[in-house]
Image (cartoon, rainbow, N blue to C red; front, side):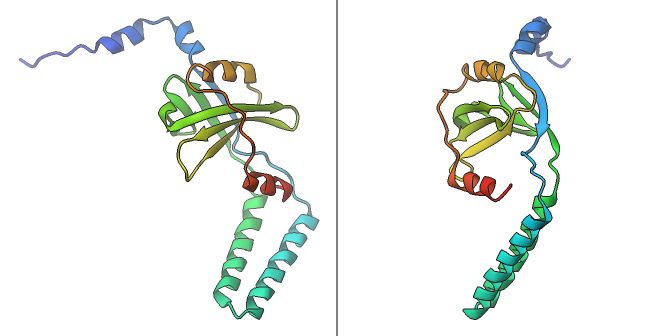
Length: 174
């Protein structure tokens, strides 16, 4: 006869009242990024800048760079016209979940709620990974105070300035 193993942790989780477990997690949906509608002038400007860079690459007899600029410029224009998807976010005792990806607290350094409506309504999380140092999450209609209070239980709060790349992309209209 096989041994029966009882998971005590699962029993205690089931026995917990729903209100306590719900207060431990915040779930919301928001766009994956802030969308800014581009005018035809914006597309013309990007096209002219791209053609100028291609022309300079051809003058320097660097055909590979010209091809890369052409492909990069085309990709940039296609990406800029794309509307953001609505993504579900959650913050709980296990970590920060963005869509299906979970960021565990031991992999994160700190957080900052950048909230000055209507311009900024976002959560910035600093990661310990060098490849992806900042994770920016749109807050949508979620209460920023509730998010801050929950994250304070797991991460230190530290003002995180926007990176140079983020500043440049916002100036370019992304």
